[in-house]
Image 1 (tube, helix red, strand yellow):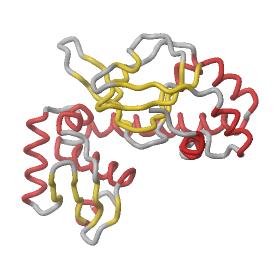
Image 2 (image 1 turned 45 degrees about the vertical axis):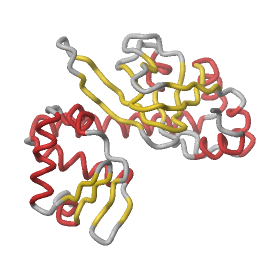
Image 3 (image 1 turned 90 degrees about the horizontal axis):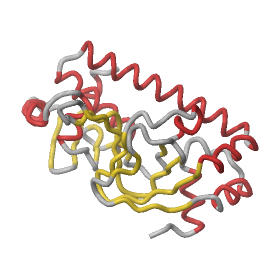
Image 4 (image 1 turned 60 degrees about the vertical axis):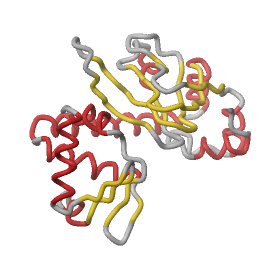
Length: 230
């Protein structure tokens, strides 16, 4: 179901590269958008496909994945907050998609075509600068992930990923920070380069040490674990 016009405009304000736009610019951008629904496990875009659209998440959760020769899934990133966006890189450099985007659960997306996006960039230098800033931020994140995979053991990589999730999506609590929609153990395994069984054991060990409290998709990071990254 497509969001209403006021809801769409409010969502666009949450998209980092559009947050600076005024009411008239948001209204013009809104008219260019289409809505797409994706069932769980549906491929939104495939690796090596031509990049012809920018996507904004309305609801649901999608993952950015690569597949090894054995079929092993490597998760580069998970988008789960309304206003998260992806697909801008292929629109700018004209190259095929560098990874596949798969719906981790039923999801709704706003779609902005390549032509509409480029026309908007020509009219808005602010958006162009915001895109550059976002690309730089994501590159820094990628560098941190590469460093983590090379230098940290599984427990260190899991702890760092949990702290990253706490900073991005966590809510303060008396004990520390609560993550209400933790990725599945399989998704976490894909994100930190290990197996689901190893993630399960590591979470169990962190729980036994009193560093996390885990119940379903809800996880509380206690202050001691958060302080280790300071």
